[in-house]
Amino acid sequence: MNAPLADTLPLGRRLTIMGAVMLGLFLSAMDQTIVGTALPRIIAELSGLSLYSWVFTSYMLTSTTFVPIIGKAGDVFGRKNLFLIGIVIFLVGSILSGVSQSMVQLIVFRGIQGAGGGFIFANAFAITGDLFSPAERGRYMGLLSGVFGLASVIGPLIGGGITDHLNWRWVFYVNIPLGLAALAVVALVLPGAPGGTARRRIDYLGSALLAAAISPMLLAFSWAGQDYAWTDGHVVFPLLGSALASAAFVVVELRADDPIIPFGVFRNTVFAASVLITFVTGMAMFSGTVYIPLFMQGVLNFSATNAGLVLTPMTLSLVAGSIVSGQIISRTGSYRWLTLIGLIIGAFGLYMLSTMDAHSSQVAGMRDMSILGLGMGFTMPSLVLASQNALPQTMIGVSTSLTQFARSVGGVIGVAIMGSLLTSRLEDELASGLPPQVQQQAPEPLLASLRNPRILLDDGALEALRTLAFEPVFGADAAHLFPESIASLREGLATSITEVFFLSMCIMAAAAILTIWLRDLPLRTTVAAVNGEPERALPAAGAVPASAPGATPRPAPGPLSAELRRPDGL
Image (cartoon, rainbow, N blue to C red; front, side):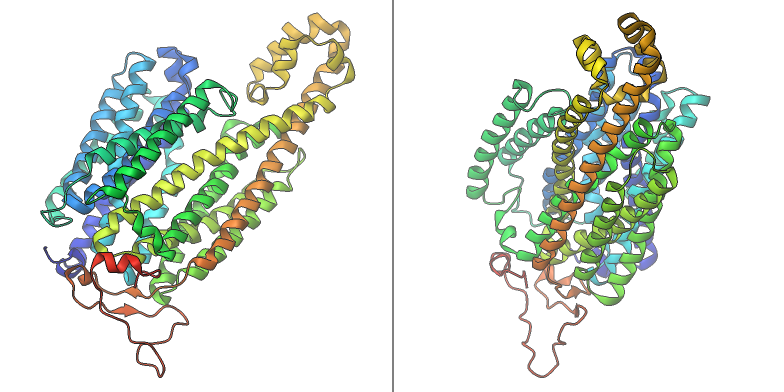
């Protein structure tokens, strides 16, 4: 095996590679947000309003599905070519999306973009692990996490500006020059070191079964509670198919010589805790952030622009927290306490959001979101580093991709569950909050409109509801019944969303409790252990130095199978 990149490349060259990796990651992350502001114009030209959500769903399905598969492939074949392939696929998807002539074409081409994004996501953090030892990796992991936050702010701004002054198709074309720049730098500067030995090979059957398990599960949870009831066949049958494919995947992987997901890694308590905490944190974080724009627009009646501004402080604090936490980890060698502190701060931010009501200010929302963002900035890079450091360097692709996969799946499941709870709670609130005359005399289609909080986001729809539904049914009484009904809808929506925030806080608190199993392991100061050489370690904060009296000597790394049998991975 070739010598590790961290030990052979000069710092300047490694930083150049990091810049290209961050650019590629920025493109794929930004593409998840840049399209949102252009969609109204896209739908106006291509039609297909009923397919609106699929523009996002297709990207999410393919990108999430490919992450664990490509993460393993990077460990086997090396990451350079896979990263380059990912950029090429992403650029091809961008060009095709830009020339789309129908919504169906756009959805298919967005899926191609998502596949390229999955290649990029799976390899970006792993390449960082190849370039820097765990002891110095924290500061760079913080920068990569900050890229996500920066992309979520810049994406809508760029998308809106391009749509207003050029054409929505340039939302996709703008990726081309930046992607080509990242492609050229990575191709020229990053060595094509193999990820494993020649005898290792991809488990293609396991890969197919994993894709068959992930895709219908994500699809079902993206529909559940929003487009279809949990008992609807559109939800039940995909979940059943996912369960069967998952069972087959486990059977195949337990017998595979080199499985996509070696289940033995979960006997490592630090790695298992990292993945579980990431999953639970994803449930809480996405459940909280998805509904704050709805609260600002639907409850407080802010414009879409002002509602979007509420997310900006969260993003900025997330970027700041990621950079600061990375520096602290690199200096102290401890990630456990930063993770715990971040989860506590995040839970407090969600609690503050849960205290908002129909009379809260935008400033209060921005303050509370910034608290949540700071907590997540402390937490996310810490968990990625913990998972990478817990396993051998030869498995860095697996460790990184499983952490990212856990966050994505946790977010999808959390949003689905919270969406169902919000809908159920809102119906209860409206049943008791609407004026009695409306409850008794309004026809079912009118009541159905009042149960849909998204009507509060469209002033035109509200006016149509007043003139075409309320006035014909209630006559002169509509002058007071309509504003009373809308006010009750806003109050009910406020109560329902703040309960989602409170439940998200409880989930975040549960993630903090799980840090009991997230022990600080010494951060390796070299990646040479992949060659069987002794590895140096930076003692974690509070750890007993190896030379201290009574300290237990640390054994040299042994075979991979032996390493996985030890619960601490050492």
